[in-house]
Amino acid sequence: MAKTYTLPPLPYAYNALEPYISQQIMTLHHDKHHNAYVTGANAALDKLEKARAGQLQIDVRGVLRDLSFNVDGHKLHSIFWPNMAAAGKGGGTPGGKLADKINADFGSFDKFKQQFGDAAKAVEGSGWALLLYDKEIDSLVMTQIEKQNFMHLAELPIILSIDCWEHAFYLQYLNDKGKYVDAWWNVANWDDAGKRFDKASK
Ligand code: MN
Image (cartoon, rainbow, N blue to C red; front, side, top):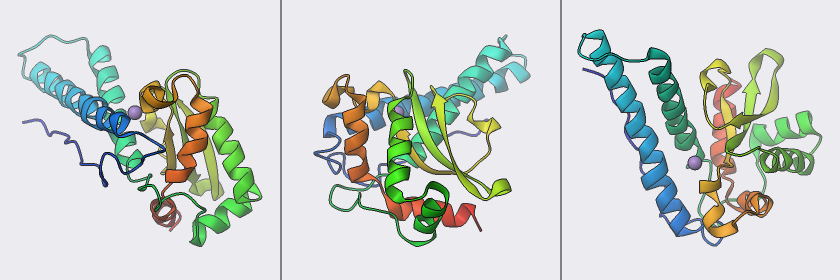
């Protein structure tokens, strides 16, 4: 029997990120989009299992592409939700070791915020801006992800993520992705990002 993925609940209410991210966006984003990735990942696993049992003919390349797209969508959103905190509780600046590391690697928090924000705003089409930690060079590194496929190759732990797909902002910000990214900093959860960094850099 194939293992299955499950949709985690949001760690706050659907309207908790208002006015920066609307209840309507959060409801659709979590209940429809993220849920579809969970369903899609489980469907792909099921197809692979049935194919192994001789019950189904599949195009394995297509199914693995579905699997990657949906599992990565599930994993990224599972990080993205706790990477944000309720309005009034999020935002500000990081503390602890992450703050020191950002200062060391980027020069200052403001320089980091500028460059990471620019990376998020410059995502072409659907994608993500991610802050990762690479132990090999003991450094924070930024990346843009096109759509959400093929994340497994990187294998670097994610510290901070901004979902830049249109479904993350369009209902509220229309085509102004820059305004969404600028507002997003108000709900950044630095406690969560700091915990991720502490674990990654241990
Ligand atoms: Mn999304």
